[in-house]
Length: 99
Image 1: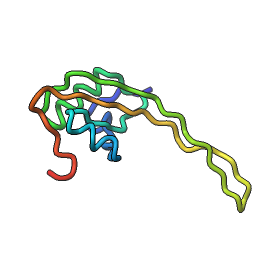
Image 2 (image 1 turned 90 degrees about the vertical axis):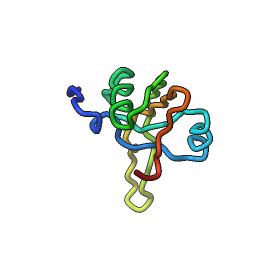
Image 3 (image 1 turned 180 degrees about the vertical axis):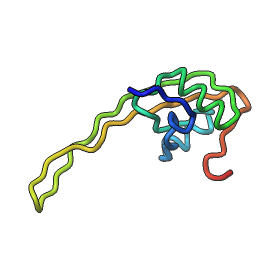
């Protein structure tokens, strides 16, 4: 895996679901991250991009889901991906929706 140099290469996008919106009240934010990113890289990237202090990082590798095309009888899977949940220090917040 290539070395991830920039914060933008590590944090790909926020994950916005009902569950993650509820966790934002607790100071926990979920992101889709690069497959090769480790917890230290994720912590540094979030702190650099959003100017906050990260207390804890949880990660999970997600398997791709099976998919098929009924018309052409093609079978395959969606891409695998990595999820990270970060807890911020008391009082820190990230404005996910807009600047």
